[in-house]
Amino acid sequence: MPLYRYKALNPHGEMFDGQMEAASEAELAARLQEQGNLPVEARLATGDAAAPSLRTLLRKKPFDDAALVRFTQQLATLLGAGQPLDRALSILMDLPEDARSQRVIQDIRDVVRGGAPLSAALERQHGLFSRLYVNMVRAGEAGGSLHDTLRRLADYLERSRELRGKVINALIYPAILLAVVGGALMFLLGYVVPQFAQMYDSLDVALPWFTQAVLTVGLFVRDWWIVLLFVPGLALIAFERKRRDPAFRAALDAWLLRRRVVGALIAKLETARLARTLGTLLRNGVPLLTALGIARNVLGNLALVEDVDQAADDVKNGHGLAGALARGKRIPRLALQMIQVGEESGALDSMLLKTADTFEQESAQAIDRALAALVPVLTLALASIVGVVILSVLVPLYDLTNAIG
Image (cartoon, rainbow, N blue to C red; front, side):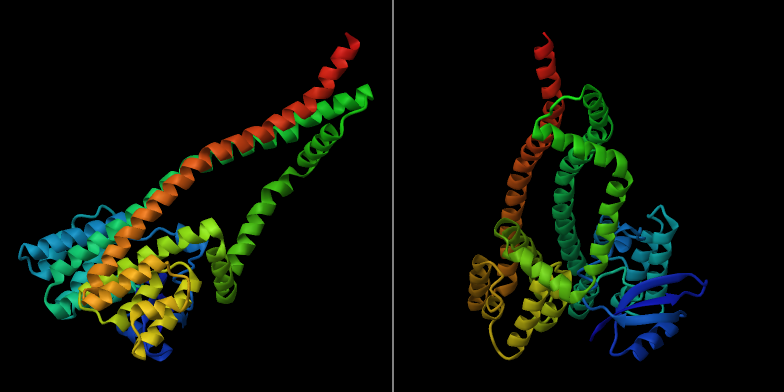
């Protein structure tokens, strides 16, 4: 079924948005009304899952990644200890400190007490739980091993969170360095350099071309610093809006994949994410075609999403997964070979998880090497720019001092 994004009013009159699978907009509206909500807007989620807006990224959720992992782990532990589902949810309801998380768990418990399965209760939480999460829980319910499924799901979420956190943490220092040195350079050009420009004008001396260039830049920064501050922000907003266009996003993602260094890293990261998702779903009894339909939504690169969609069509027509993914020529060859071995040996789920381990390790090593080189390169480049500016304004003064002496 297609995935819809919607906006609705809850019984308290508060606006919220989310996503839900439904056969049509009419069915989506009917299901929202059954939940006591008033639908306001509904549209197909074409590419939205892969390209969240800045507003979505900054908006605080009732469950962040760490809280979702804890909830899944704790629920799996309680169910494994023999606690009934509604009793386990009642225990977990008292653990979160914020009221929003408590209300979410309470709503899930109330729906379960009403006779609905856990997967249906999770699906009603306005997109808070991903399609991957809901479908894995549904598969665990069908197989009678919900606590094992939740334990695997918690492991999957923890691995994904660690990889994302590692990249973010590694970028913090370069970002701070760039901001501090960039601010110092703006101060140097916008305040210090114009002081030298006035002095050289009063002395009426001939200046080297590079000094004249730096002084011109300094005067421009002094006069137009507000524009220089706002233009990058406006450009970022315009780019973020353009990025919502699926055609532009797909073309940009395809272009990034063709870049030698960045493309290889993106392909490894996305392959690890795809393999981890497919392997986890298959191990929990989800059919391959359904697993491909879910796994496409965890990818961040729309060019690879198109390849997975094409691969799903090929698998539906009887082709093997490895051969179907190879048609797009974007998945690394090693991953395709490992998937083919898994198909031939009848252990596709295990081989997909091994593929994910392999490419997560390679991605982590590539990121570590890139970031290890980024800091000294960035430091050297920024120091060189600052040094050129300082030398450009001091060389004429040094020459003038020598001439006078």
